[in-house]
Image (cartoon, rainbow, N blue to C red):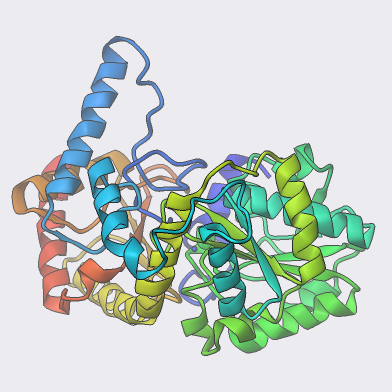
Length: 435
């Protein structure tokens, strides 16, 4: 599938209706990410030389300064920290989660802060073991490679909008010689019927929970269990891309253990929702995790020391994880207020997707060029010290832009009236830019 085709299927109205169909990251990161809008932040591309490069560098500096200076935001962007911010947060939180008189880790040794993080993760997910990985992309590739070897089948069933397809540079094919088949191209999770009806065998079914590029959408619990059962009946194993699994269980009304128990392996991220420096984990049975450790080393993931990342992940598990249900609940308040305010403002066309967010993240679509909305957002932050939206992209038709909204701790004191007021200010900046 080409990039333009992926964008069309990601847009509202493509396939089934986004309001009824069912992850950025997301994200809203002022640092550049991988993929079309992987971190929803200004790109560093083209900053190498000449007037154009200098102009883009100045633009990025202006964006960061505006967002940094905003006293009211819906979330703190993933990359919106100085080195001092990061060091101060680590120094403040680390003594509460680990004994700082312990020795630093050496190649992730078990009796270290990395081992403690792995055990804590396995306990939370209810699995026998977990292995730390420096990146989620590496964790995913290792999981799929291991399952292909165990099942003897190099075919993976997955979604064309999944992180594996859109944001990992075809790594599953290039590095491991695997191939992907798509049970559906609709912007939602595949159904049990679609899994049953796949015309060829497959060894592994991958499910991204939530499906970020379709709008952070999740199936209902009954739909998820039926899809997993269908894969089992096809003699396939099930792998969860659970980069955002932490915040998904509220929608399911189930615990992390109950959710993870559906899969043979689970990948989770420590930085997306939990705010760690970076890092991920693969969880599953003892023997599977032992095999992934061997492949982690072959893929270059056996880093000498990882204690800052591990400490920040433990802080996230202690301080952020318990609050995620609160963020999910308030995201529904913010999304509802935005939808009502856009309608009251007479916006020519808009979409808040999903209408009731499945996690603490959702999409907003507006009928203006992304560059116009980016400029409006910066002007709003500079004038009012409020940052309602961050980066916009055009993954669908030109002139129709989308942003990902993330609701975290800074948003909890925003009332519907606050959201409506901020939206009014934002649209007030859009109007003169569109004349």
